[in-house]
Amino acid sequence: MVAFLVSCSNKNDEMLKVIPADAVGVVSVDVPNILEKSGMLSGSGDFTMPESLQAIVDENDESTFSKMLIDLPEMGVDHDCKVFSFYTLKTFGSVVLMGIDDEDAARKVIERRAGKDFADVDGLNCISVGDDFYALHDGIFFHATVNKPQEVSKLSAAARNMLARTSKSILDNSEVMECLNAENDVNAYMLLDGVKLLSKRSKTYKEMSEKFPLIDIFVESDIKAYVASANLNEDSAELEVKILADDNSEYVQLLSGTLGKPTADFLKSVPESMENIVSMSVKGEKFVELPQIATMIETFKKTPFIGRLDIESILKTIDGPVAMGMAKDPNLDDWNAVVTACSTTPDDVLNQLKAFAASMGQQPEIYDNEYIYEYDNKMVKLGNSNGSLYMKMLNYEQTEGYAYDNADAREFFSKSPMGIYVRAKDNKGGSIKFGLVDIRNLKGTFIPAQKGANAIVALLQVLCSIEPVREYEDGGTDELEDVMPVAIDELKPVN
View (cartoon, rainbow, N blue to C red):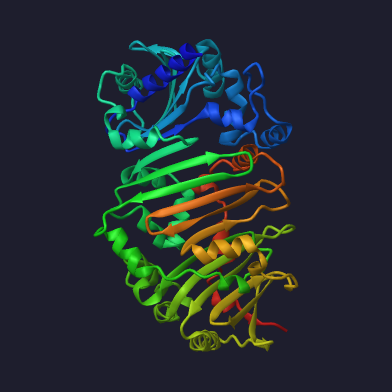
């Protein structure tokens, strides 16, 4: 047993020696512990996939995580060693390192996926195809994504230097190693440059930052680093993130002056069918002074028709949560949504919105203190609920209750000044909540939808269901644009 543990520890150390000292981010995954808790290892140590997970993989065999789960049992992976990934600003943007105990098996799987055979390039057995670079060396599988296309000889040289394990490595950085050695299933240490690298590659982040520019504070600021940990248990998965930033940093100063006191009262205006809810509590007067918001306001002013609305004066009245709830229609390719904002002068803002609509020739129908318009197949309702302004855009007549009746969501938003809550749909996958505890700490929880289901398996089901990222050029529609139409002149009174 001692010999076995020492052997595994040695291979983990050998992989850590591959990670350069100047890496801008490092992640370690305790695969042995996760596999044991998930029940996906047989008594003989073989990888077994539960039927429920296998069904999801079969339905989504093109997703990244599905491919990973399909390949892992055949790759000759050493299940007793951790998996590491790291990020750099040099030749390789991201690299995954895995211990291999059967290189022939790994070679066959990689060649099948790459559609290309391994070749010896200056002493390294490797494959270069597109943005991907694969290598096998001394029982280590090296999979990298390049920062920019280069000749295979240059890629091989860069990989050889790392795999030689003779240069200064991340082992020399005590702060990072303290993070990686913590007893968690997943540990991550990301410098801000590493976060920027990942965000630039993410289409989702790009779209979110365009519509919610305040999230750029977490990327375009003077934060030093993010230290994260995740623990996957049978009944839940817990994520914690610590933000390393000086007291006098721009990040701390901005959020200290901008964030307001959290409250869940806005949920009284959000229908309970809204599976996706995001909220941020802000002080409006300080909020509009942020460079990111100032840019958004200037962009808003240039928008035809709706740009005539004095959005800045409206934002200044906010003192509390600004939130959105969204739900995909179960039968139509359509989204329903509700937007709420806690205002110090809700009636004045409502009158301003009514006057603006009237100036555009739109007269509403008034029913039960709500101002009702019609847009496409949706009924748009403006109203004020205890100081919280709301705009509902629904393609049905609301008969259900409100999200405030959900004790879990109510407790979460009452404590988090900025957070997101995603509820499981159709008893599949699970529910996720993630948000700020304070300006330096974030926490998140994943809970399976089905009672008694293994949280790790349920989380893998969710990850395997994620569709491959589509290119911008594919002509796909922007769903958020569909949810938040800006053509105010299309509104008309309900007949």
